[in-house]
Length: 411
Image 1 (cartoon, rainbow, N blue to C red):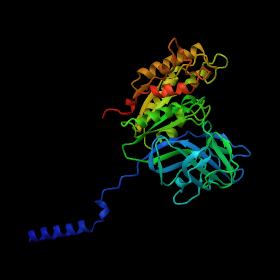
Image 2 (spheres, one colour):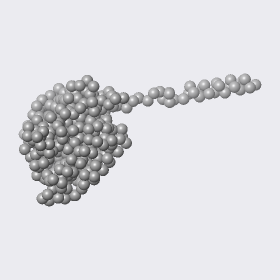
Image 3 (cartoon, rainbow, N blue to C red):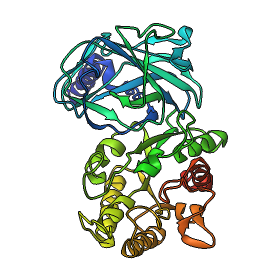
């Protein structure tokens, strides 16, 4: 009797197992691995009477990608908008130079299968993926049709150092734009991602105008993050890394100025980026310059306050598995807001960056750009003339000074 019952129970269990849905045992498919290949930090900008939304118009915005891929998506932003933003159409294509595109490469972009989308105020939108092979270092044109609507405030990166184009009507699918005017912002465009192997990742360059590329030559992509991206692409050990430039001119760590302060935007501009594995932080020269300005100091802080801000960013990065690399502050003696007290604060911050165990690595931009005969000032060969920002040669020196081993840690 016991044997029969045992056999019966075994049969019941076997039947139940066979009747279970197959997906219980099937391995879950891995999610798509997206990595940022280009990005820009948005901020609020007042719209002009003839700006986007005043009539039907097309924005054709040119970007220089860092990491190649065969499957692409775009990220649009209305994060600083005060009204919903209606986007009528988006096309993405390889640039043919100027405002022209290589029409054979053009893709009509969709959002949840729809060619249009309304993005709520304060939100962003990620497009569906589409087949477009982006070569490493390619120039890409993103054409955005904005129909007439009320837009009081733009979500915009205001210093693109790149010529973009605006034309009347819906011209997203045209090879060339008729009646186009030039502008040098990135409006509503936040990023481009590529779907790549799981081993690929992105590096966020996070900082102020010196990261953003102030004083660099327009349309040449000579910012230090551009130089770094080109070097990474040429090295087999680092060719799977994209670089996202999240610099904002005038930005500070502890107070708002141009754009939200660094601590306020760290989650949006660093942690939320697709595939981010590293962040290079070069911030606080504006905190120092304004706090210690001998003519008109304001938002007064100390070097210790700045270091505490760095520690906050390090803790938040590490919480999300992101390695944080500190970049020393370049010389600023001779700049409009320099002072003896400010130079002492800059030296203190740089000493902490060079020696801190809170950081995962150091890039010594100070050493790379200083005048060997007078280390508190820019090397004349690299100085743009304002004694604060590098010129193209200075950005090149910065990008070439970076040890690529920082991005190939031992396992």
